[in-house]
Image (tube, rainbow, N blue to C red; front, top):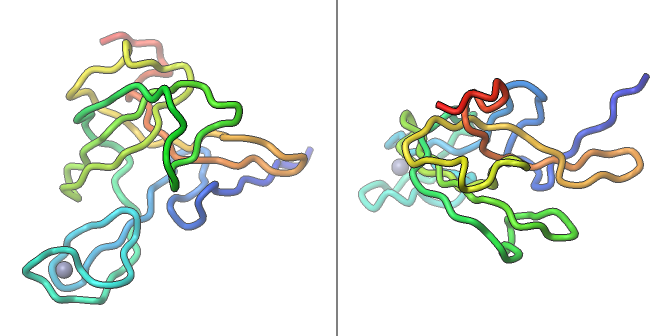
Length: 151
Ligand SMILES: [Zn+2]
């Protein structure tokens, strides 16, 4: 048995572990502000003029801040499956980083299963497959969803 290769739909934005993948962000070395996607030009903190960043893995879990149902093809660089199927988009606030990260919600989880304030965790899911590759993208999944808990 050979493991299928996994490749990120957007290189360098996230790690590819099956368990515990991380988004990859930037942290300003001067003021400590986190950014996602990564920054490489200048700090967006208006009172900071740093141009030095370190690449850091971001928290894997956060709180659902807002969500919506996307019934249209999302703009670049967000990537959707082809043919397009409607999906939910979640805005999840990472407490430690004090930032909100948008992402698709995992397949099979619709807006009726989402509730503002619930804990969400980061996963990577296959977006599409080629003969040798699984092309994966990060998504948000309600924490504990695998156990079927409805709380
Ligand atoms: Zn800064």
